[in-house]
Length: 252
Ligand SMILES: [Fe+2]
Image (cartoon, rainbow, N blue to C red; front, side, top):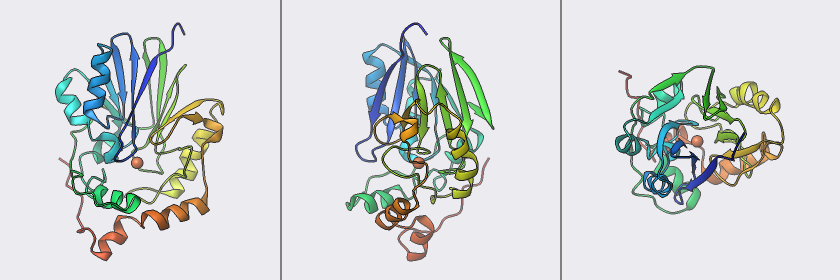
């Protein structure tokens, strides 16, 4: 590997989500286009154009800038798991419908301006695993449901592992959102992480990078405490009347 890829992290102060811009000369990959403005600023600073946007999963705080970025860079191809691609097209599955309420729970502040939005389908979709090479580095994308059905891990040779919200360094993974599954997480995601090099650098969807061995794979006590603090999730909120029930948008 000749020279290291430059990695710029774009953090959304409202939701704490991380987006990443990988720069190799004038070419770039955007992982999780959370904030269009700051991502464009980064790209322009390095005079780079994104060839790819890769989505770690379908949740609103990780995809909010996607459509604006697609309009600005029409040659950019969006890569996602098949389920992620389906779910970004629906306000319930992408959580944008409840994100303002969710933020209210965790910040204690009223969030009035969080938009309900959908995105168009990805340009490249896959089930299972997708391998490709980028400037001589192998990228391995693999479906790891649990946090959400469309979640993937992105193993980038010589760079590290991008985990979205499927592995974090400072809090346990949430599996209670729409379509989340603790069983899937234990069955698919945990073994995926366990066979990788524990010394890999993990670039998470929230928080600072950490070594894979330090990621929080399971912590039921913390998870319960987080649930008490953050609220029980959208089904309970629907029952309580905090948010209106809704059925998924039919897929075209
Ligand atoms: Fe998420």
